[in-house]
Image (cartoon, rainbow, N blue to C red):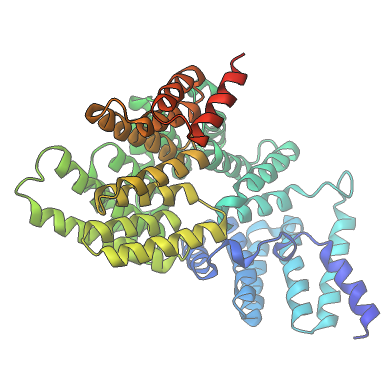
Length: 480
């Protein structure tokens, strides 16, 4: 192919709506973990062909990223076959993304006639089903794009939400787009002031109204209502979900999470193990099991049972480590699991391994631009409780609070800093650094007057400290 023809073909390909043009970069995801998740989803969704069509089409792109374009073509053939079987005469708009992937894969394989053939088929579909304007996509494409972003990586969730929103503007009663929008909201709504103000709760109720048999939606609503203190309804929803679809690993894993948070840890473990019989390579399930064993260990400490129960606690720590190691092996870049694993290596008195794991986790979080505050929080805990290095614990709690004051880890860091400062002041009321720490915490929480008072006290005992002087000046000006 001559260069000008190649450029013209590439220009047409770049205008397509498919996985190859949605900026799904390998740097944002562990493609091998994504492959496992998609294959598990395909096996689960064969009874619900719409989901299998989507997952096979997406898997074709993933196999291309892994260097297996022929496998990609094979997956597209299965996806197209299922789409025709499921949608019948209405299948053409559902083939837009599939044909786009076909065109790109044939281009990359050097099969330019086939590539142009699929471009021609796409032009025919566009002519047969025109949209309002060139910038508006078919709802099926918005929906496919939304599910892809939702499955790909956490930092794509907001884009998923926007895609489902646009699909619903075109087809407000569609159960698939309503479910997708509800799940995207569930994963992106962090500030919750009450049931009546929660967009997630409203949309989950809307999606369930359209499709009352979706057990995943029921359990997600149950989880969210539990957080919002609507306990009786949340319990009923979770039980209904489990009764509706007792063998669905997605339902089981969310019910398992609900039960763990409700204190029924052993029942949660039993359910998660049952889910693992079907999806044994799930990093999520191993992580959830690790959290269950971690809760059992923590409960032993808090109830005073830790005394004389050293052997049981050591066994639980080993269980936590076992499942976290599997989770981080199955899903590289799983920052929450990596940080928790490093902390538990420390708890298991493997300090060198803990330090090494923490440094790897810091590097991963910085490279991915994700959850760096989480790593600082766990490392601060490690320094405080294992290395007994209060200075480094304070440094990393401060880093966490600076980066993400409104997150759970940020709030916990503020709590620990306050406790450390108060402990120091109980020993020495002239500890300027302790007052400085309290000033920093109040300032991060937006409590300006309390922060100013603490910095004034800090300067009494350390009058030349640049940090305290700068903070005091800034707060004084802001309160004028």
